[in-house]
Length: 178
Image (cartoon, rainbow, N blue to C red; front, top):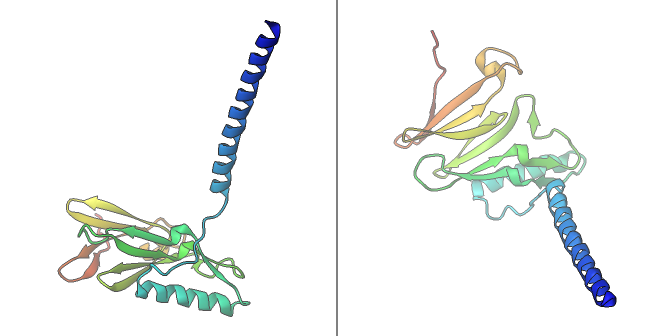
């Protein structure tokens, strides 16, 4: 009986060890996925207008010590900018990296984002952006350089823009606070 009990105990121990190793393998794979930068050099899905922006970035990087451009996953966003329920394209230079220059595409004012709406590109220097719903309108909120609010770089400043579907342009204003 003892040998059967011992054999069962050994089998249970092996199963626990295998389970722990499988779990450890999963955790290692997740950890590696999180620390490994996701890059994508394939821009063939981008509309031509945005491919031109990538090509300009590649040329600028190549001219700087023969560098190579890498696009991180955050470089491209698909969002509904104009409220027509179709996804528009956004190309964010904050997701560009040049192998030979640390800050080729961004500076203290932020990075350029290129918003493609109705086959036209609109570019905005920003330190980050997001979309908000305001009634039926989509509002593009951008963290912009403090100089746009009469300050300097660290001065908090934001711009809010709404797409005018009739005029086919962005509408924004500087609020007049009392």
